[in-house]
Length: 444
Image (cartoon, rainbow, N blue to C red; front, top):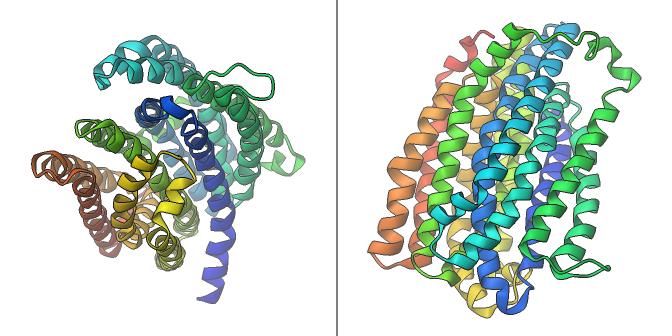
């Protein structure tokens, strides 16, 4: 068992660092926007709606990584290295096509979309300017996540970590200059956040593509042929589409959550924006253990060892709950200090600190739900995850947020109580799916 914990940790830690640095791009932008003075409240609201909106599109496209990781881990476990490389090449082609199409569509619909999402004209204007540039960044984002899925499936999780570190260095410099008007740049506010994040994504994509030409990966024959295998395209889509549907509908649920917070007041919406980003700070590192679970589950299923795959999944869950418990205690002990890292507006800090404590109480269950779902994704058992997550989002999370937050008048406390209930139910259902064991019978 100690060897399992060690193996999971070796895979998870680089992903955790990479995911934390990925989250830091948005968190740093929130911190910079939160220092725009009198404009910070509307700017934070615009940034929050913009980031969640981007998650809808990015999450849907990101789901192709689920199919790629599942297929590559199986082929790698079977020692079919050439077939694993072919999966990556097909994924690259899909990423380029989807990225270009969505960048064009997203850029065109940014303004009318924000007009529908908020009644505040200033929030709508600033949010549209931000997301136009982030839509352009979907192309390099997709390229990165396709390569990430490939390297993660091989157990080379540190590749993504280094790429994210490079991206963050670029983003920190540009965000500091473009958002606040330092380093000789014009003060662009929220628009500057969109530009800096997109530029850093292009730098990251270039870095990971260049690395893939390393001699050590020649055995996979990634670029041996420039012909796209459409049978593989169909396989990737078949595995990925449930994850894509789940990503869209659950992210829309979070979008509704942000919009509902705006029905209370702009301070609540600004605080919820920061809290949503803090929630992603806990969510993304857990994907490190989830990725480790998915990798080991897929590889062991490919090698014909389903029981070993299950043991790795539970090892990842145990480690993840320990790590997240420590972070939860920090949030509970120092809620105002944590929020002060992202804004100097006292009203937002006071409002958000109550909700941060409430959310922290559910973080252990968050760990169980996320890692279990990723293990099921690694096995290709994607339909179960989709059905559970989408149902809980739209039958529990969203309606309960409105009832407790708006109707019952509990405001931000009611909003985040509903989030706790959703997280608890999700963790129980994912754990049940893992224990039933039907995922062991999936053939891909």
